[in-house]
Every structure is written in C-alpha cells, then in structure tokens.
Image 1: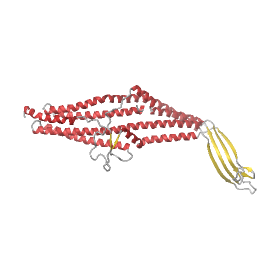
Image 2 (image 1 turned 180 degrees about the vertical axis):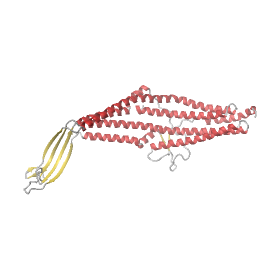
Image 3 (image 1 turned 90 degrees about the vertical axis):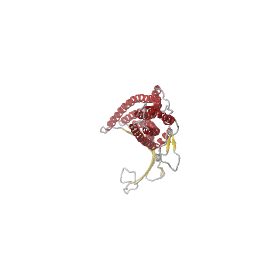
Image 4 (image 1 turned 180 degrees about the horizontal axis):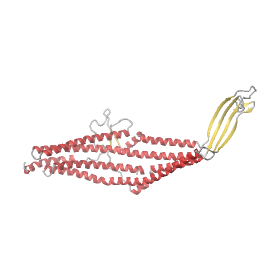
Amino acid sequence: MSQNGRCRIAPLFILVLTAAAPALFAQAPTSTLEVSQPPQGARATAGGDTSLTITLQDALERARANDPQYHAALTDLGVAREDRVQARAGLLPGVTYNNSFIYTEGTGRSGTSRFVANNGVHEYISQGDAHESLSVTNFADYRRSAAALAQARAKAEIASRGLVVAVTQAYYGLVIAQRKYSTAQRATTEAQRFLKISQDLQNGGEVARADVVKATIQAQQQQRDLQEAQLGMQRSRLDLAVMIFSDWNQNFSVVDDLQTPEPLPTFVEVQVAGKKNNPDLRAALAALAVANHQVTAAWGGLLPALSVDYFYGIDSNKFAVRTDGVRNLGYSAVATLQIPIFSWGSDRSKLKQAELRRDQAKVELSHEQRLLLSHLQEFYEEARIARSEMDSLASSAELAADSLRLTNLRYQAGEATVLEIVDAQNTLTQARNAYDDGQVRYRVAVANLQTLTGSF
C-alpha cells in the first residue's frame, strides 16, 4: 500500500490509542493500601477472613516479639543484670545456719572420746554463721559486672537498631515488589496491545512481518517478566511473614507510605547525635572498662584477702540450751588474713592475660571511634544522594510514559520503527522500577543512619 493510503488509515489508530493512553501510562496513584493485590493463590486465607493491614511500626513491634537474635541480646542483658546482683552479694555479709551431730567412740570413761580432737562421745553443733570476705578482687568483680551490664545494654540497643534496618528492608521490599508486579502487569498489557496493533497493520499491508515478529517477542518477554515479578512478590511476602509472625500467616497487606519520606537533618546534627547516642561506641567503652576491672581483679590475686566469721549457737555434748545449770548458748569470732606467697606463676599469668585483653579493648575502642566517623559520613551521604535523586527519578518515569505514548503515535503515523516502540516500553518499565527502588533506597539509608544516631 502507498504512503498516502497508510496515512489515511493511521488517524483511526491514533484516535483509539489517544483514548486509551491515560489508563495505560498514568503513574499509579498514591494509596495507603498495598499497591497491588497478589494473584490468586499467592496468599493463604482462613475462612474468608479479611487480611490484616500491617504498618511499618506494627511490623517492628511484631519482629521484636519474634526475632531470635534480638531476644538473644535481651537474654544476654538479663544475664548481665543477674551477674551484677551476684557480684554485689559477694560484697555483703552472708548468713548460714549449721546443724551437725558428731559421734566418737568412747574410751569407757564417762564422757570421754577416743579421739582427743573431739569434745566427747556425743557433740551437737547448732550455730548461725555470719560470714564476710573482703578483697580487692571482690570489689573489682563488682565494678566489672557493672561495666558488663552497660556493655550488654549497648549491645541490646545495637540489636534493636539492626532489627529496624532488617524489618525496613523486608517491609519496603514487599511494597516495591508489589509495585513492580503492578508495573509488569501494565507492561504486559501494553505489549499485548501493541502486538494486536502490529498484527492489524500487517493485515492491512501497512507494516512488514518483521514488526509482528518483534512485537511477539516483546510480548513473550513481558509475560516472563510478569511471572518473575510475581515470584519476587511472593518471596518478599514470605520473608516478611517469617520476621513478624510467630505462627505461619501470609494473609496480610502492607501500607505503602513511600510517597511521604521523612525529613533528613543536617550533617552537623547527625554528628552530634552520633557522638552522643551511638551504641557501638558505648559498647566499646564499656568493654574497655570491663578489661580494666579485670586487670584490677587479677592484681587482687596477688594481695592479701580478709575474711571474718561470727558464730552464735551451741557446741555441746547435749542438744539443749542448758546442761547441769550451765548455759550452752554462746558466740565466737574468727578473723582470717590470707596472704598469697607462691602459686607457680598462676597469679602472674592471670594478670598478664587481663593486661592483654585490656590492650585489645583499647585497640577496638580506637577502631570503633574511627569507624563511627567514617560511617556517619558514608551513611549520611547515601541518604542525602538518595533523597536528592527522588525528584529526578519521578520526572524520568513521567517522561518515559509520555515518550512511549508519543512513540506509539509516531509508529501509527509511519514515523517510528518497531524497535523504537520496544525501546520505549522497556525504558518506561525501567524508569518506574528505578523510581520505586530509589524510594526504598532512601528509607533504608535513613534506617542505616539511625543505627548510629538513634531516631531523629
């Protein structure tokens, strides 16, 4: 057919395409519900119950109740707290009540025993004992336990902030997987529509068979991409479900709030918050304090230790308060000063071990300080760049949609090739996915930054 004949048919297709363009190329509107529902069979339902809507805050609360690593950090904190209680108890007097009966073979004489060390054939001991031990090691152990508790608190905070990053990635990973599935659906619909148009034009003699072949290949590729997007969405849903539910539950939806990104403070504010609220730095400082107190405790093994015992009760040949008018109740006190003399180098070896651990703790603290400064700048720049690119990515997605619309019109008018159509379709899909990825990148970057600074 001649070029003039082709131009006469083209306006009809232009009219049809123009009417359908808004529905095909418009960016998905912002919604507080999930971007698209998973296909049939992707979610488990129970008796027709409506799905549970999960916000990011809900996901965080559920993850804190179910994550084993976070609970392990809390367990370590509880153990450290009890260690401190035990160390404090070691500094305070302890009271026990001892009861015993000693029988010794007699000599035949009244009241005398065969063993001179024993006080008689029958001996009854019933005494309370107040015991107190004082040493440098005991005081150092208590201070070490207090530093270990501070270290456990810092590590629990590290685990909590790390969990926020993991949940944020999984949560918005599902949001974006649903967006990409929706984008793949639109791309598949557009590819099928273009295939139909090219087939109609071939039947009218307007285009060559090669255009139909290319459109068919593109439609098949978009169908495969749709299946991959569906698989990615299902995988993201399973990953999040494992994190937030104690039982197996896939019947939930997530809230898409990526259109309202949280503000980013200035770098000066981030530096101040990082130096003040960084749990990694606190953990390193507490580890150094623990090592210092271990050195002191090791020194205590080389110094004298004092113990005092106060006994009150009976130590008599009869189990009675009085015997023959004599009062059996009484008291005694024992003070012991233990002076270490020789231990084959064991105490010196323990001191050397403690000093080596202290030196290692100093190196780790210095490294953690440098790492904090590095990560503050790195994470802040990541968040700043991600935030600055969001407007550009949104503009690119809008331009790509408009480009595809115009390229379709040019193809209908005989001014564009099928390769330009395919390129425009792929560009639109890539631009939309890049915009979605950019939004998640910013949220994850902020979460990473907050592992150093806390919430802002």
